[in-house]
Image: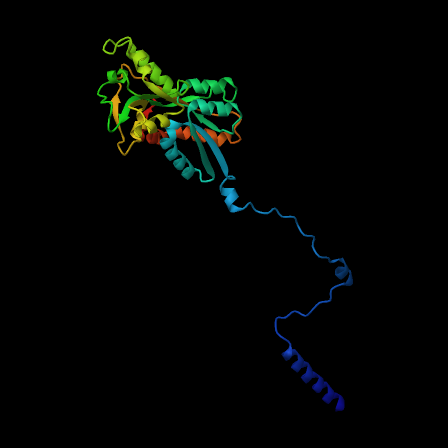
Length: 299
């Protein structure tokens, strides 16, 4: 009787214990000692740091040094802004001066990436020195000459013949400057014109009171009334938005068409972007900017 009672008590306790155990929870299993001793912390794996987004999207910032004839100041200023907008990691630094001065600087190892000259002669100076390959320069725009005089016109200039009047004060660019060389060619053409006479060139040159080293200086001195007349590019005269000067057209038969070449300097540290700048100058957009400043597009 007592053993039956004990069995019943054991059975009740077993049922109570099973009811207290959470359903679905597997009973813990013993981990063999061998597995515990063999388990270790995993070795770290090497990872490559991702490239920063800014560098992945754009190359490192660079500066292009563009040496350009002073007559290109306004047009290239706008071209530079447009180019920088297209390539935001590029900064254009311009050096504007007479082409002969720029050629001398480049041949003296000045850090130039692009050279834009106002004539072929100064480009040849640089190619002969080996800074630019002879096959690289390309003509990119044309220009032409015009005679100018102060708005007050103290010498009463009405025709080209008046440039030969005794006592007139004339300013030209030096013959080493492209516009000065072009002016001398105009005088050669004029001397062969019957309406001006064989002595025209000689008489005009007698009136020269100053030979300037760039075309901007000629324009400025005439604007200030320091001379009675000068010869500049039509594009320079067009920059006189305050009408400080008057203009006297030079006929096509006597005028000289200036040819401007451009080239990448062969030891430029930024050859690809320098070429991209040249390509932009030659593009439809670049030519449109030059035309807006009065230049004649390359045909």
